[in-house]
Length: 195
Image (cartoon, rainbow, N blue to C red; front, side, top):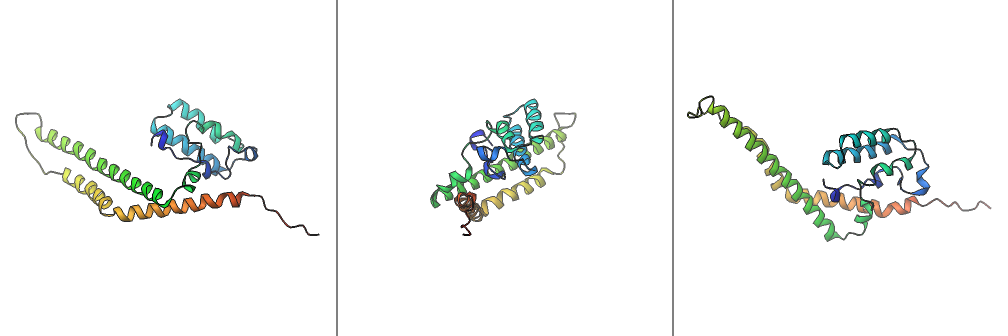
């Protein structure tokens, strides 16, 4: 995932740690896990070196308050909560995001077919050549099994396009509803006066 496509974790915390009123609250294990997840994703994407990851992960694991966490991930996560982006999206925009999600899965499935297939066939050819490059001794074409497995996954993604898009759109709509409800639920409760 590229930085531009990085997930916005702010709604995953128990409270938005960037908020001044939440910064002094004690961080929970869940809050520390969210920060560690962002750091792991950034390290896997190559946006952090091993040393940077180790330093920040140690600080995240030792964080006492919510306010300790944002400095560790501010340069790795979008500032706008993903829920806020979704809350302004129309049905057509959510459908377009769902279709893009399917296209991303299709690309991954195609890559998952091509790369292992090429590697396995190259190994099969090299092992068939043996020590004498002039003669080729073909054995059983075992790379076909790899192609069958990875090809079945690609076929499943292609055949189930509509199901994948509809499922993702429902997930986005659910997140959108939660984002729209969140401001209401985060307001302080006002009890009517007893007198």
